[in-house]
Length: 329
Image 1 (cartoon, rainbow, N blue to C red):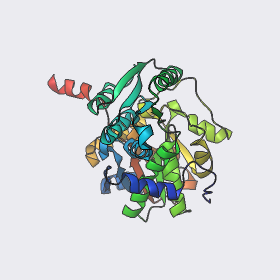
Image 2 (spheres, rainbow, N blue to C red):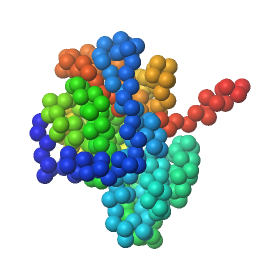
Image 3 (cartoon, rainbow, N blue to C red):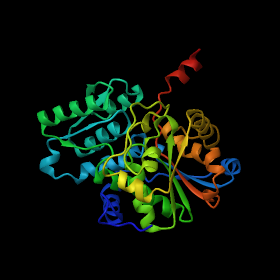
């Protein structure tokens, strides 16, 4: 499967440029292994811990690349985005590092811990209703009033290039990988990972992990065109977005398959991350492990040769108030 550089919003050269641009700002996150989880899965697993990234998630890579790509004149007017979670915090932090304003449109049902992250990094929060339409309309109004630059959470070549730097690191840290499993939502992460990884090693398999309650990417792959859902229902709040026109072609062409798992499997995988890896991950971050342990993956003869698997633990921003309340009681 060749990577056609004219065909996509990013390529290996733009991803390498992103790495040079952001390397002094981001953490090079560790890769962890566990003999216990290898035994449970029957494979050799390598966990890329983006939950240890600044802002608590991989999103800081793309946000940082987008913000530091802006010309000074444009940056001076600030940036705007709409996001319910990790991209919002990542953009606020990257904007703070560049000394510019981040206007962040957040739906009223966003997890409180993620809203607090935005505020902690100095982002200016503008509330919207929970619908995508309300988010987009509110962001458009802020754009008109401020002249700020719009930085979309995933449908942006600069974002895709930034996220692709994960592959550059991972394949240096674990060059023997034959498979990488990546959470999928809007597709910015998996697009960057796939473009870089397939350029470095065309034989590597890229598998997406998706909740059954938000399985638009799996439906899109099956239909051969972007499918959106009237509603999503999953504990993985970071995986409820739909593919964009820049991410869909990469998913269509370079993602080998999409594994869907239910919320129970995601929660079980979270527990294993906490208890065995000793790593705090949010549901979206644990879904790669859930996919590897799922019956649909284990019983699929197409993946019997997936023996050395990279799993991206994409984020660790979880509202733990219920846990702390239970301890207090």
